[in-house]
Image 1 (cartoon, rainbow, N blue to C red):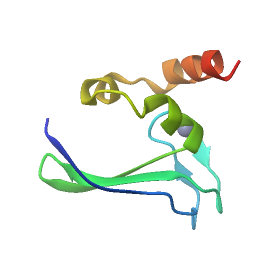
Image 2 (image 1 turned 90 degrees about the vertical axis):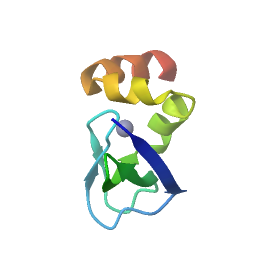
Image 3 (image 1 turned 90 degrees about the horizontal axis):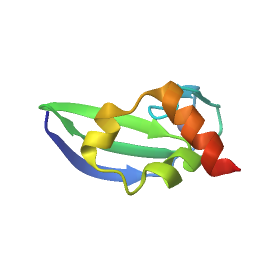
Image 4 (image 1 turned 135 degrees about the vertical axis):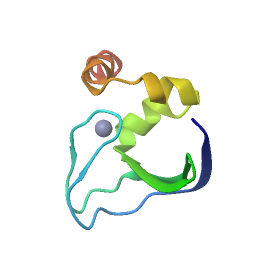
Length: 81
Ligand SMILES: [Zn+2]
């Protein structure tokens, strides 16, 4: 597995997306965090809620690969307390 990050941006969603980290909806019109990069030779875009990005911004690549959205939602609730 090789991931090369290219750009990060904070666009407004033009349609509903699914957050790659927590697996929940990013609503239309919601500002979210977008990463573009090359993943195993393929162009890949991933999107996260701003809140999810705050939690994952210091994660290592393997932590993203091991991430389970249902476990992440529990972690998210811990952090949100
Ligand atoms: Zn999320």
